[in-house]
Image 1 (cartoon, rainbow, N blue to C red):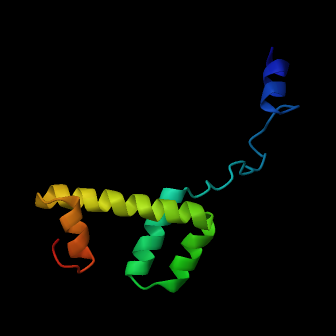
Image 2: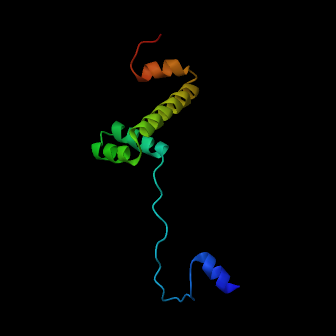
Image 3: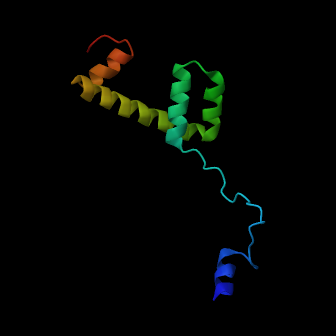
Length: 99
């Protein structure tokens, strides 16, 4: 029974405490929303190195989608917080006159 378990786990023999731990986990890849958040914050802080790093995590299309989604969510959250329409909040953020 133990041989079957060892085979399932990929080990052929008994283990001892002297075995060196080998990291088996790969670093988790960045997702597009994480890349978008880092990218936008880096742009706001004028950190070009971080902008370039975040832009390399995902494709340009994915980054664009993530930044767009972040902008939409931010405008909606600010509109709710200030009890205004998303349209008015977006225009204010961009420095445009009220419509």
